[in-house]
Image (cartoon, rainbow, N blue to C red):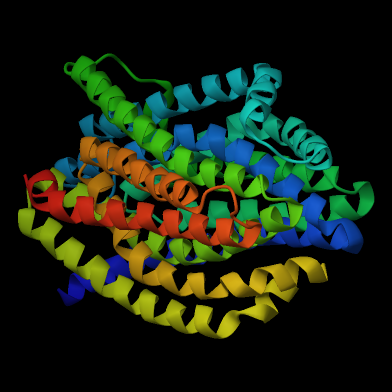
Length: 452
């Protein structure tokens, strides 16, 4: 067990370091927008929130490019019995997985650029926000969409590296992308104003893809060659079917997640720019915790997939126990962080006093995130590694029902007199219900789904 804990730490450490920078980028974008115009910060923050939401709507549909690639790669790695992929059948199998993912990523990215006008039009059929926020969000979207092929390809590379039990390469890629994103967005925003924030993201994504191509070629030359020169092999038809079955389930899982997270932003936008700004900041702070636990979820993906490939049930059990043990430590840390953070964090995020004052009553909700979120996020990693994608799909669709059930029930009970403040409290309660449903369902399904 001590050796396994070290392996979990080895895999999780780089992921956590990289993941810390992910919410910091989102926080930095919000903070840059929040300080461009102190008097009109709410509209600028709302523009970032709605613009980012549109990309969540698009990119979360392609979450299977990372998750599916990670689980399938880890199992292929475990079946090969090799700690370092070399030549031969193992390289062909690993190269085939990445090849499929990259083909889908590049074709989908080009399609998104071509259809950007339709996407914006359709999005604002359901998104209710002020004209100023809509104009800013549209401007942000039409610039950032040019990073789509690179962003989706990065999903595929990240999953592939994790499946190879390598979290250093994804960490380096994330640090590069996020560092360029913050620096370029700040500099370009100072020079160009609001559009510079989106331009910084475009530059960062393409920089990350260039790094991943170079790193894969240098670190894994044989599997990387197989990506581009892949002969037809016996059983490849079955592998294709399995890849697309896993991708289909994970796509539907993404639909459920999108329904919740987009629903959160769409509903909050109906209660004014200030409430939208508050909900955006709160969600960024809530998700900060998830990027720590995701490090152990990624370790769970890599190790669970490897042990299943090796045919070791006990290895899968030990991985789950180890990841949850580490997760409890993260829970304790964030209960302290969220308990002491409070108002200073709000003031760091924006200089608009109306947003700070409106956000203070909602700070206690932050304390629910570590307790309820930890099992939901770690189970995700275990189930992805096991490619138990049907259960992931079902859990997410059920949790979406839980989210909207709480929201519409509360709305019905309150009648027409709900204030914006009470609406946001109800919305946060619905959000935590979706996490609770997800965690309970996966806990019940774990023995039959992952210990097969």
